[in-house]
Image (cartoon, rainbow, N blue to C red; front, side, top):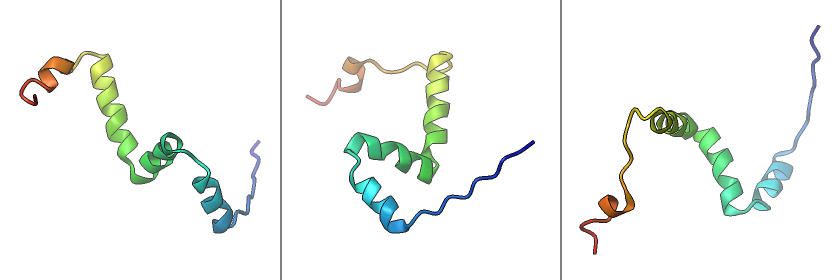
Length: 65
């Protein structure tokens, strides 16, 4: 058994909803729309499974200051 739903949204309403989001809240839709979330998810999995080793803060900024 399946159920179908039809939703009508105006672009203006979607734009107004997006305008109300703060910067952090806007990042997720942007990642989803651009497809970058796949890359981020892949890298996150690699870190969790220890397939790659992350740099320490000290190593990252060693020659900066």
